[in-house]
Every structure is written in structure tokens, then in C-alpha cells.
Amino acid sequence: MANVRLEDIKRRFNNVTAIEDITFEIPDGEFWVLVGPSGCGKSTILRTIAGLETATSGKLYIGDRLVNNIPARQRDVAMVFQNYALYPHMSVAQNIGFGLQMRKVDSKIIQERVMNVARSLSLDHLLDRKPKQLSGGQQQRVALGRAIAREPQVFLLDEPLSNLDAQLRDDTRAELKQLHQELGITTIYVTHDQVEAMTLADKIVVLNHGRIQQIGDPQTIYASPANQMVATFLGSPPMNILPAIYENNGFDVSGQLLAIPAVVKEKLQLRQGHSYELGIRPEHIFINVDASACRRLPPTRQEVNESQLIVEVKVVEPLGRETLIRAGLPGSPVVLNIQVGGDVRPRPGDRLSLQLD
Ligand code: ADP
Image (tube, rainbow, N blue to C red; front, side):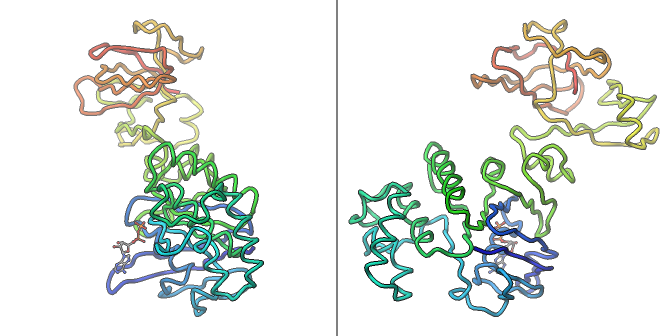
């Protein structure tokens, strides 16, 4: 096992800078997730660590070893891809044991290790099958097994769940987390899926346009995003962003005046007449009961009638445990995502009074 350290890594392809200013250190045994929209540079970082790409500049360490000029096969890392990349003519057992065979490990030891890995991934009854006789989820487990059997210092996983259907993806995600807890191998995981990032990561690295936006544990990133990109990328439905103008000691949001709690006013040095963007998560919006047909009470708050907005319901999506509401500010194109309890069921056209936490 090993820590992984990137110092000011940059990668250019001809005139295009794919990644730059990439600096972080993953402590030994942690599970880090690189997340961001397509094209933000996630795979380039992972491939650079694997040795499949060369950094244009910067330093890359695995453990204490500077590996910039060390070929991929000598870096002691194992990479799992989204398309499994299994050898079709080999059995499951041969696929799992392949890396060991290449290293000329004794065949008895290979057999033993393949069996152990297969057991831990519930593949032991499939060892004689060929990849095409397996489901997508089983094939991905074989690919994981092949990586585990090599006992690498670092695991690199590039969107390993994206070819699986929803239920299997959830199950495999949980298995991955358990596997990491058991093995404790330093893991770097690339995904564009924010649920995977939030659920799997010890630390998340949010990327955009080839640069790091924020590094932190999932809860910190969710509660204190560094910028608007991070705020709107993590969370589903995404954080609402409301254009507002600071006037008369409040925010004018499409003609409605929103009072600002004194504590917020003290923290932000707001300037009269200036434009701002207010961010609020869908689950931090409550419906004032007196103004709606809903029975669910908002939490008691002293400022209940001050930080309120009137909206008109456009779409209601009952999801069982919760209801998602899309509602517009009258006379404005701004649409809010609101997430409330499943027992709240307004109808399209209803006017609601919202309280913002
Ligand atoms: P992600 O994994 O986040 O989708 P990538 O790391 O694959 O993003 O790509 C980052 C940027 O680098 C993109 O603009 C992409 O087009 C560019 N890029 C990646 N690989 C190459 C390459 N081999 N040649 C030219 N441009 C590349």
C-alpha cells in the first residue's frame, strides 16, 4: 500500500491543456473520488497516475518513489476500466490469475489467491466460465478480481459501474465500499456520477475545465461548496441559484423582497444596489402551511414571515418518501426546485408561500 502525491501536474495535448495545477496527496489506504463533468480531465489524471499518459510537467510520487519516468507495469498499480477489458478466450479463473501468471508466480499460489479473490467477490461458482457467459455485473466483478489478485499498492478505477443497470450499480457500489474497507488499498476512483462520489469517497476532488475546484470530504463539499460550479454539480436536484439585487436591507428576487437574517448581513459585506446570486438547496425550502393546502407544518422559526417567497407550482413529482416540486416566481423565468416530505402534494397552479432556511 502507498500514498499517492501529485505536485503541480500538467498535461497538454498539442495546444490543448487537458489538466493543470493538479496538486494533492492521497494518504495511504484512503478512497478518493475524482468527479466532474465530461471532459474536465478526470481520466487524464487517472491515466497519468497509471503511467498510460505522461505528465507534460509536474511530479508524481507513488509511496516515496518519483514515478514520472517509470513504465506503467512497474508502478505497482492496477486499473479497472468501465468496459471490463477481460480476455474473451480465457476462463474467469485465468482472467483473475493473469497478472500473477505474467509475473511467474508459482501456480499453486496463483490457484489459492484466485480462489480467495473469487470467494470474496462471490465468483467462486463461475470460475470455469468464459466472459461471454457472464452478466455485465459478473464481468465487472471479474475485472475487479483481476486487479485485487495482483495485490497492487494502488487501485485506479475509471467509471467502473457506468455500464451496469441501476440496481446492479447500487449493489456493486456497496460491494466496492465493503471491499475497500476489508482490503484498505489506496483507491482513486473516477466518475461523473455525484451519488457515487458522495457515497464512496473519503475525499472528493471536484474538477472543472482541467482544474481542481475543491478538495474535501463529501459532507464539507456539500455544505460549504467553494464556488457555484461545485454547488450546482453536487446534489440532486441541484442547488437553486436565484439572481437578486441587494436593496432596502433585503434581497429583491424578481420583485419580491426577501428579508436577510442579521447574522448573514454581518457576515457578507453587502452593497446597496449590487447584484448577487443566492444559492439554496431544495431541501432547505419549506412550505408555509397557512398559504397552502398542505398539511405538513414548517419548522417553527421566528423569522417565518420574513424570509418568504411566493411561487406558483408548475410540476409535482411524487417519489414516495419525498415530493419534488418545480415552482416558478410569478412574472419571472426563475424556477425553483423544492424537496419536501412525501405527504406534501400541492397541485400545478397552486400558489405557495415558501420559507427559506
Ligand atoms: P474526462 O475524463 O473528465 O471526461 P478527459 O481527461 O478524458 O476528461 O479529457 C480532458 C480533456 O483532454 C478533454 O478536453 C479531452 O478532449 C482532452 N484529451 C484527452 N485525451 C486526449 C488526447 N489523447 N488527445 C487530445 N486531447 C485529449
